[in-house]
Image 1 (tube, rainbow, N blue to C red):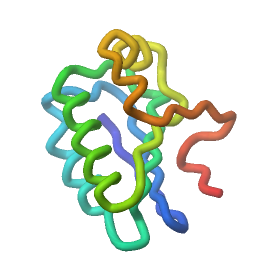
Image 2 (cartoon, one colour):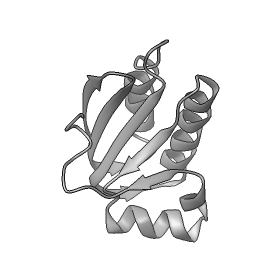
Image 3 (cartoon, rainbow, N blue to C red):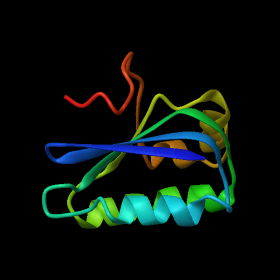
Amino acid sequence: MRIRTESGIGHTAVSLAGRFDAHETAAFRVVVDALFGPDQATVRLDLSNVVFVDSSALAELLRVQKAARAAGGEVVLVNVSDPVRIILELTELKQVFTLETTPQTASTLS
């Protein structure tokens, strides 16, 4: 999986591409945990290029959401790919996250 980050005022955009599975969660955790700070509580995850997620990836997304909320922010899933959207719907996790569809990627910070 490829991970790209870009920081803006009050939030950070993270673009993921490829398979997000048990083999990738450790790298994701290192990157995302380094993002949280007093002025960086919201994480925007661009999932438009993620082709697969497994239960480990879902657990990691939930962990990040919990950490973001504890810091006064949230996780926004942006441009969720069809395979990921189906899994979020089947697991009823779609209600846990803010989902956003934009013509721009999450890395285009406002």
